[in-house]
Length: 315
Ligand SMILES: Nc1nc2c(ncn2[C@@H]2O[C@H](COP(=O)(O)OP(=O)(O)O)[C@@H](O)[C@H]2O)c(=O)[nH]1
Ligand SMILES: [Mg+2]
Image (cartoon, rainbow, N blue to C red; front, side):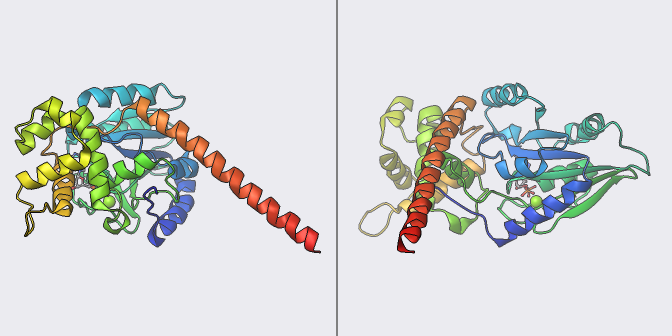
């Protein structure tokens, strides 16, 4: 069962963006460079896709630089797509975004036609941080937790340049199962909407495969990269838990505690610069999800037809 999180306040955000976008000139969709595919929001695309736009792969400072480049190439090869990578805490690139927005909507500017920019994205990708850096002030509240910004906020950057910070939004049905796990691991899903052990195990599977040395260096497991790769993920979680003293009376490992440690170490970047997905993997997941969605729809249609003919026969 895939992770889903679309609480009431996201319904409101959806409506709010739907209204706001009418008076918007440029949309900046902020993505998480550690999960550039999974943090792309199809609902935001639907709501804002008709406006000049750019994609910001934020948190590049903590993502794997090789993968960030691969993702930039992948996005920039798509029609009408401009993608750039950045670190929202760095001033110069954030300020350069102002020029990029002006290039994307050259007809806007001056008091009569101020530039209106909407910043959107899934929770916790750095929208508020970006706005604070662009404006040079702590205007938008930033926090390392999903769902901190609850209302839209207008920030005046210049006499003819306005920014709107919007609350983070996911979409009603995340059909790519792996995306749900990656979003949860990266802090974009509310805490009660997922099981930490399951998320940690999925995270470990990726880390084992792609970053075994990071695991060795962080947890001093004394196993070496190859052994780490060969282990079962739940066995590895136990080893990490034991190493970190998460042992209950009777000697059993507290795997819940161990899971929290793995997730926290990834989120706080103690594990190093990590990207959880490649464009090719994401394409495969998306293809599988399309087939699963089509099957789901076919079942629904068949059910609806059976009910309809049933009703007719009864009449
Ligand atoms: N390393 C790193 N951390 C960032 C970056 N941008 C934001 N953060 C952190 O990510 C967390 C979420 O940021 P926030 O701006 O509140 O995200 P929002 O929910 O999208 O508005 C905060 O702890 C920020 O300090 C970045 O570019 N690099
Ligand atoms: Mg925010």
